[in-house]
Length: 167
View 1 (cartoon, rainbow, N blue to C red):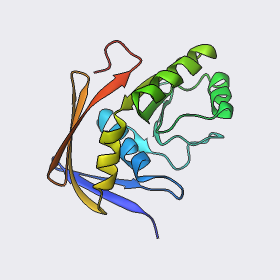
View 2 (view 1 turned 180 degrees about the vertical axis):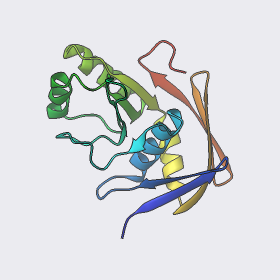
View 3 (view 1 turned 90 degrees about the horizontal axis):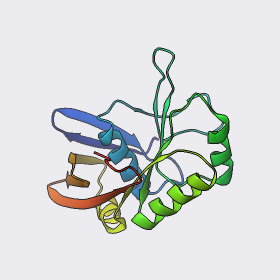
View 4 (view 1 turned 45 degrees about the vertical axis):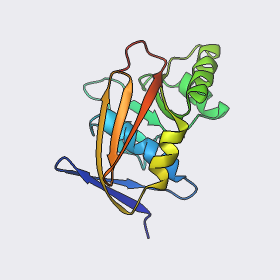
């Protein structure tokens, strides 16, 4: 049986699969990444790569694929990104500003570009502990913050990014 979580709100339905070994916090990060890209990315199962992204956007018109992960990459995955020219700078969604800063520093060390978004740890943990299999959900990103209404409760977090103007 699949371990799916359903999120409805704003006239749409989003299903996020919690894969074996993944935490509820990672499931929340996948949902936030999906929302940040306004649903233009699909949740990944097979993308034809050695590693599998959490969310993936197909290349169009000879362009590059968009890759989004919701955890810090291993050293092997960083080397994988160095070898790929068919992927736009990867996007990472993390818990904690310190994790985001450390990852940005690691990518600079390897002369690689990446786009990093990090949410307050307490915010992610509160959302993760409030999950049901079926959820009502609304999300708004603005002015360096995210506001989420999950099952009627209101949550808010600042969003760290290594970009000057993230959104």
